[in-house]
Image (cartoon, rainbow, N blue to C red; front, side):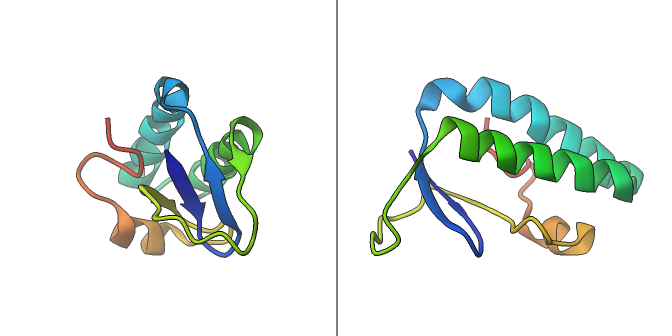
Length: 92
């Protein structure tokens, strides 16, 4: 699967990593619902770091269709709320 981190680029990520990423996504969703800005920021950075760690970066000139789009590291809680579907950032 191709994942885009807004403002950074794309990575290829194996489907086998989604269980691990969904745990962080669930935490992020809970923190957003509770208005926990500090927790949201920490978990968003952890989620993005995990995607970078597990994924294989695509060349900058590659333009693959992204199956998943994640917010930039500096996205606000409000901006991410607008991006979310009912399932969170990472569909189950």
